[in-house]
Length: 324
Image: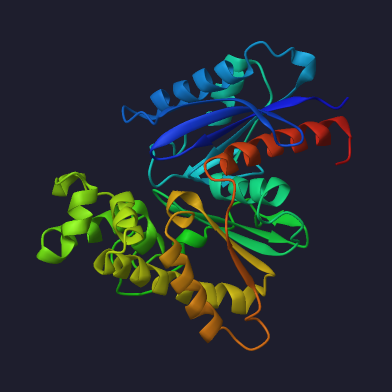
């Protein structure tokens, strides 16, 4: 039996959002809260509270289940969290805890995979059979779509584009490695560059965007200053785009995708970063691959919710023997 609704939950390092979603991708109701910093079970409790709030009033017969996107390496086959850089969820049985409280079917996946699923089903990548999704937010995530299906790898751990090494001697990454994309493109990395700039006379626009408080400089303040025409803030984003572009060269040379979709809060707002990355990729990718399209995602903060709900629908339909 085809169901009408699913709940998608998008768990980020800054906020957690949940939405009640119809099959065609309309979000009927959405709720959100800041991500707790008081431990893993506070995070799980918030996921449960938001999911229950989103699905309140829906009859069980109309409900497919709950999909949850986590900023973590998720063994999709075992439905286990292997590693989580920005939240203390490694080893926590998120799926079972949420199922036991909500009494609903639950499926978890990496948040980058689900952002890709959201854009593939309802957004900028609709109709694309071979594409990459890169999400630039608190961390850097991603997903790969090959021959019309998500590629997760042997254990469901594939697609960690944010932990591609771009410099062997580069800065430390939150995961413990060095020189990964996330070390250059995550919010903390861009914010740190902004704070360094704000300490000098060249950083007036960034400092103004942060309300005059150096400690309050965020990646968003850098983006605001750049959009306002500040050349020094724009250079921070262009330098980050240079790094992303070098990584895109490798992705394009290896995978030859039709489309690269760049999302996340930074990816969808920092136009200069995306433009520079595209320039570098088009200049340096091997011949025959440079016609790849680069698009900014269009679903914004809804990508994760929609992708997680789509996962819940797909898993329900698979259990029921239904075809999309």
